[in-house]
Image 1: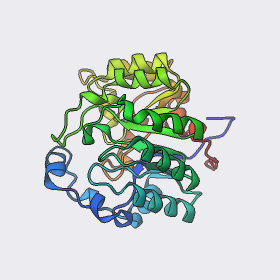
Image 2: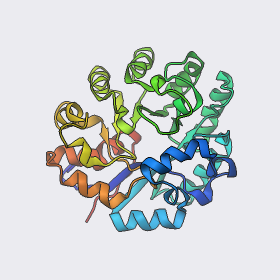
Image 3: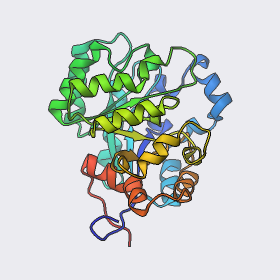
Length: 295
């Protein structure tokens, strides 16, 4: 409840539908997908299109989705940004967009120009997938981008923790590296996508230090967050207390089913105020969304 009203659920991170994506980012090589298909069974889900996204949103009762132009292979950043902006422009009541930058042959000033274009397109942030490109979160080549995002009022969403591509090491996405960036760019909103497992305790410490650092839980089963022995115990404890305002509901659609995610969060025994913030209030406040209350 916010201001005496119940807000519609907001999915803080879904992927741009397959049928709207440029060719290179829509069709990843086997080296990028084989382990994902084995671990998460994504072979069929990753080709879901816009009609399926809208059907899934309606079936789950999710009123708004933040579409991320994220990618893990190739260099379709500019085309992804344009496609995301087009989707948002066509349905601004349903979608908000977050763009991306070119990670291949990372060029600092090019990323600054891309950030400016992202803002001009009406997108509200930048999504980065550092480990897929052998880049660390605190790589100094990203600092001009972080400075530009801070000046432009853009949030920065970063893949954190484990991934299953087996192409590049994951150490560059540890929360302690996020802490370095938060220290150097105070107030810049940073979203730790996927909750940084297996370094969850580190992430909790970073979030406690920096109110500008958020966590989303896209692409994973929420029930594990509430189960002992999974490595999520510290975050489960703190998200129902001092970190209640820094956690975001996300599915990483089409990776994880929306209805299942909502059912598992609602069945976890969280405080009503925590659940309200998680499912809508926190992302609405962060991105200044104009959310309509549920009837």
